[in-house]
Length: 312
Image 1 (cartoon, rainbow, N blue to C red):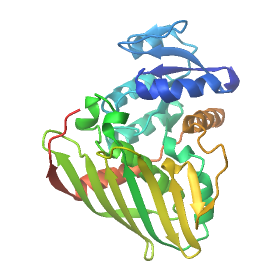
Image 2: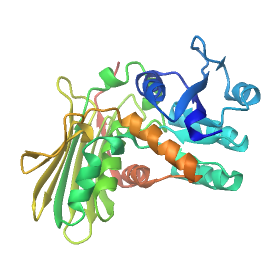
Image 3: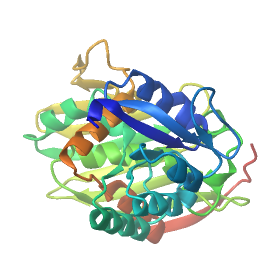
Image 4: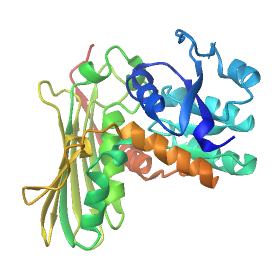
């Protein structure tokens, strides 16, 4: 089987699978949809199963699975797939904890499988150019503003408010994935303030402070209560001007000069599946835990503030 013929199974037919994964698989030159696994949904003309175990038993020629389920249940499914010798693509965040992701890395290596922990925002059109431009610059300050409306993006999804669901860090980790991709050197968390609605187990807002080499300072403002226009911006002050990524990384400006082309809004998930095909060709896993590590550090260092109750 060549990579151009690779069938992939989607596990979990929720919003992210329907809106992002399925369209990108449909247009991918490297994959086609081989099966779906969902307790509550199916697809006409595609082998559909209620459990991953049923799919693994009945579809021996489907070598790869994409896990599009909440992070709290992802580990057991990934473990099952890797034990069956299947390659695994993990939606972001790759797990509910750092240790379980590390365990999956060890299992994938032991079983000769590819494990790909995806960070879709890294495939936004402006990110690679931002990384290249910043490589030779002296960076002073980074300001991240990541504010959106949870009711719009996660309507009725209770798992995000439960332990392991990350709360506002579900979108905020996208900003951290871009940050850790574009900076030439690492940063570490120094302080955090987390706002928890009094009726929820995960935060609805967060303010983070980080430090890096020299005088590098990073300040981040995450909030899930913004209505109207959504804000996904990263601003980087350097010795050669100010770089701004907007639209979640889709658009790049340097001192007001546009650096991205008209195709800036092309699907990030097209990039994910292109990278997955490359990893399969090379029999190589790719798992970067740095964005999740920053979230874990925020929970460890964060001051907890109680906010008003939140109800969908």
